[in-house]
Amino acid sequence: MVSKRKRYSREFKIETVRLVTGSDHSVSEVARDLEIHPNTLYKWIHQYGENPKEAFPGKGKQASEAEELSRLRRENQRLKMERDILKKAMAIFSNDPK
Image 1 (cartoon, rainbow, N blue to C red):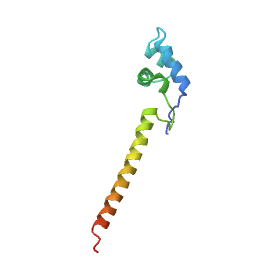
Image 2 (cartoon, rainbow, N blue to C red):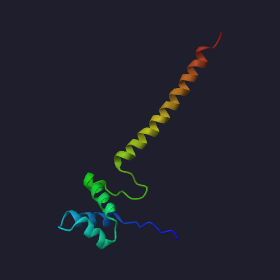
Image 3 (cartoon, rainbow, N blue to C red):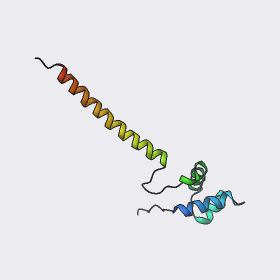
């Protein structure tokens, strides 16, 4: 039997992290109460600690830096192709016998 992976909303993750960081409850205690693996909760705490506004972007959404990097890589690839085309055109026209 294949078990389905549980999905948690961004709000749930934020509230869970705040429950751990803003109170005297331990990670293992909160994880046990909410039936979450402690390692998952530690990962959420780490992600939220790095950048709270962009933590847990959701399925298919990227953080702004990752999105910008992806866009720049696509642009770089397009510019390299254009450069190669221009190089080939210059080679063709410079070898034109008259």
